[in-house]
Length: 76
Image (cartoon, rainbow, N blue to C red; front, side, top):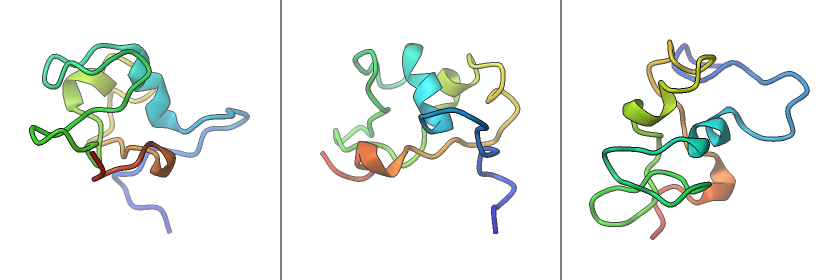
């Protein structure tokens, strides 16, 4: 069952919803383009920072957007 915090499934998209957020800069962690957000320790963050994913209209109203598993959350 999907929690109310998870993004809705993407119809016909070959990539997870969070990867759209990677097209935008994050003022908090300043990642490279096409990279996930990072924690202060340098590990991949479990969710995208709010200032980044709210720039994507279809994600803007969500409370959080998890980092896709293939991006390696919690790994440096």
